[in-house]
Image 1 (cartoon, helix red, strand yellow):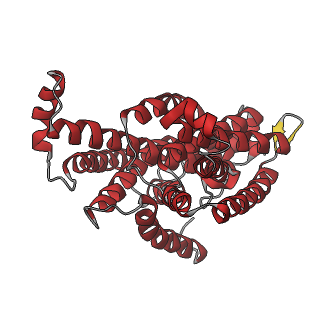
Image 2 (cartoon, helix red, strand yellow):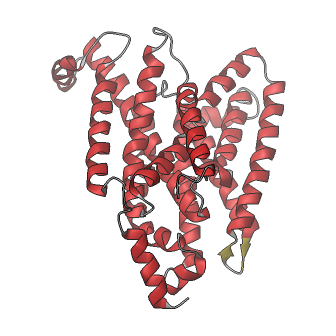
Image 3 (cartoon, rainbow, N blue to C red):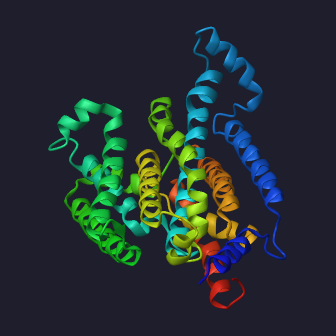
Length: 361
């Protein structure tokens, strides 16, 4: 294929698809939805304290006083809001990157094994916290679980990259197959640990695997801030590479894309984003696969549109699901993963059926 033909196909990627929503309207709509979800997340809760109490809470905090308003709004709901925004944006953009890398709109961040590796490390820390992992728990305290989950996810990704690298390049097909195998092996080890756990540990393991933002705190927000900043800085750099890879690796190479370097950067960024999200919120499904696929259906495949809107809609999806989780059975709380699965599974099934019937591209 000539360079002119490749450039023509690249321009086609950037053109607004006929009959789809314009990028500007998508961004405006997604931003409004995120703003509404954020306001509701701060306003709604089992305590009955609403957003009208925010000025009093801020005044009390500035005066160094600890009131019920400041405790609920500033120390409980606000960190929960920020964690929800990060988790949703991280999982959705990671899904968009994986779908671009594999050129498959139904790909998921978990295909490279990062979620399974993070879950295995975190579950091992929970189950062995009083025995083998006791020094780690004592040294890092509340950070031990998030740290172990991130190390597990990132270490799994590094292992897969080493196994699937040939001549400095990452073989994508081999990475996919190896990721599936590693995920299956990690799940078997998780089952073995669960079988050997006592009742208390088993309950903790089950709740963590279902995902939740109930443990949100300012230390966790501070811990994920570097990952959020890195994600915000790296995503714009990957837009051109992801758009080039949509046409195929050979075409991307003719467009001047460093294909091996781009693939490594995409996998590393995905591992960091998903590992950090799993570390602070547990295992949360469907956001990484449904949100970016839905964005592509609405606005087309151009990653200049897909990545930012996926981040906005991913954050909105997690915040709305978290509101439902808090309010559905109050004063108790549903696991976040259950709410997202109840909503996400039918949506995902609908998207798959539409695609199989040839109604989508």
